[in-house]
Every structure is written in structure tokens, then in C-alpha cells.
Image (cartoon, rainbow, N blue to C red):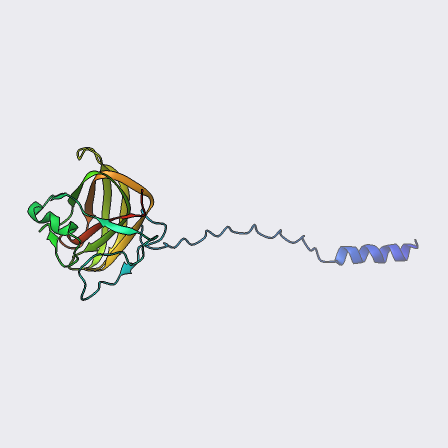
Length: 201
């Protein structure tokens, strides 16, 4: 290469601006998904309970959304309660027009004696409450009336007189059923706690 050409090339290289290599792109930032509540927590069903309108002229409790045909209420032979126990039977007489009222705040409980171990498929809850609001209930079962096993927990907003039907994921068999209210904005009271058996055994 001629000396003049080499001198020109070296001069061009010496005068060219330095360009550092570009920075690597930043690692993508992991975005946590936003978890929204699916609705009120009801351990007895796969979906939140939907209130059933209370008929204005019919006091008889019946399932508005039976899981299958042949669902009939099971009437307890006896009922006791933590408050106003003498009136406890009004929560299990088949009528939404009678009321048991504990006359006190939570916790309160109702216990029903079916007489013999009985299959239970659906529990229909009809509260009496002022004001309406979020409640928490536990449903427990026993064969001897002494040792109870909590089978289902319910946490949901409820309104006075509106029926909520809990379809159990599998039938329960027990002689005694206890419903314990652990949280409520009002005194604990029930128009009805209906226990239903569906189909034949």
C-alpha cells in the first residue's frame, strides 16, 4: 500500500468517534397477577350462595333450586339453643313466618335432634336480622350429641328473610346438627334452618 494511502487510513481511524456497544435490554419485570375474590366464601358449595326471594304469602319452606328431584324437609324431633332455648323449635318447624331469637349477639348456636342418624343433602338458611350484613356460621354434626365435628363453614352477606340454600358437596349422615353463628351484625335469630334429604336411600 502506498505510504500516502496508509497515512490517510490511520488518520481516519484516529478521528472516528468511539461508540461503545449498546447496553443489553433489561430483564423483563415479572408482574404478579391481580387476585380478586370470587365471592362470599361458602365451604358447603362450589359457588357463592344466591339468595332466594321470600314469598310474600307462603310461609312453608321449600327449596327453590333443588339439586335433584325428591327433596323433602326433615323435621327435627327436638331443638335446643344457647339463648331462648324454649323457642328453639320455631327455627325448625317448617315455617318462615315463625322466629327464634337468641336475644343476644354472636356467638350463639342451635342444635337439632333428628332422633336417628339421618341423611342430609341441603341446608336452607333463612335469617332474621337487623341490620343485614356479613355473617359467619359453622355447621357441625354428631351422633351422640356430645362430640361435634364441624363439617362446613359459611361466610357470606345475608339479608333478613332471604333464603340461602347450601347444597352439600356430599351427603352428611348424623343424628344431631348444630349451627353456630360466630359473627353477625345483629342479634342472632332464625326464621328457619331447613334440613333436606333428596332422593331415596
